[in-house]
Image 1 (tube, rainbow, N blue to C red):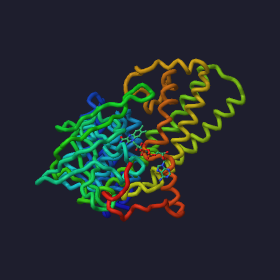
Image 2: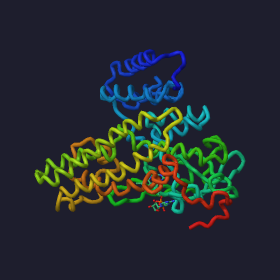
Image 3: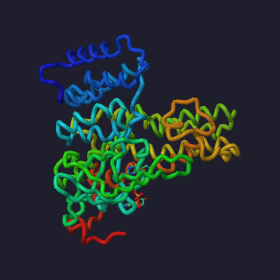
Image 4: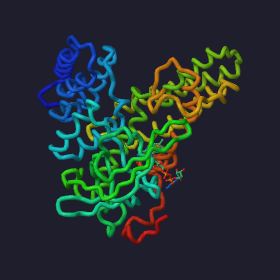
Length: 404
Ligand SMILES: Cc1cc2nc3c(=O)[nH]c(=O)nc-3n(C[C@H](O)[C@H](O)[C@H](O)COP(=O)(O)OP(=O)(O)OC[C@H]3O[C@@H](n4cnc5c(N)ncnc54)[C@H](O)[C@@H]3O)c2cc1C
């Protein structure tokens, strides 16, 4: 427990209730950014963050009390607007950043004044992220960055980015990386949206040409970029077990609604629907358990369970709902479905295009946030204790490795 030693559970509960009363007093949520700013300043953004960083240094299990009360009060959520920032960047900066970096980045991230994205993957480095080739070369007090990133979700709507770059090509691949924050509007950052099969342009390729970064934008020690990025990736996978952002489980509502809307009565199909509903419910309950298992040190490899299960479940459910539509399923209205936020994590009611879009979008679930195969490797090695994947390149300098 990281609860302040002087407070017992009853005192912590009273403390949180008092702060929540203050936050919600007379609040009509007309200005969400001002509301989130107040929430941050009261230490209710993530109660397990330190005081002054949006938290109260409490055990993570207390966050549920805050989330439940805010949900019941109808408070607006910033989670979808700045999911990458709040989900993965904030815990990384809280864990590895300097005091100055925490003060600079965490509040505007929480108020959504600064939207964040993640510059990790490259054309030649996805699953093998440690093999990445984007270079950061020291020039006085600055770093000069050159390289290409790809699949960068929301870069076209972002202000800041988490970047992993190679600072020592002579070191083995995991050891020569460093982690930086990049202002996405800085000279030399070129964001080019990529259109995907749903019709939206949700992600981008990002070219970095002589981008200059102050050394103060480096998160963690020089050469520890791999370790720091593991915090980001573990938190990314954890978002797949977040019961407040239901993915596979959430879309079961659309399948049930489609069943009703389409007037289906076939008992065999009803049987399939009920089986999916049971799987979704098991996933939802397991997510709640996993969310409570998060410790002050952050999420563990358990996030990979939620990631693997929900990716596959989401595909199954959206395929089922799509089949219910019959021929109508083929009438996708094409490349204009209302932008990137259309139907994401929606609670319904679900339209025809929601079902079609989810069917198409779900194909990516087993690739993003680490492919299903990679997450199964993590589970095999770190939870089941099975022998590791073959690693023949761990000690060879990166610049001597064969690259595609
Ligand atoms: C919708 C979406 C959003 C994304 N958003 C971002 C983002 O915001 N920022 C970012 O940096 N990246 C993002 N990504 C990239 C994502 O992290 C990579 O696509 C993913 O890590 C897989 O890398 P890859 O595409 O290069 O495939 P590869 O690594 O080339 O893998 C190809 C296939 O080989 C399998 N494979 C590879 N290595 C192994 C192994 N050791 N054992 C078993 N199987 C293996 C993989 O499972 C996969 O099936 C996003 C991807 C998608 C689809």
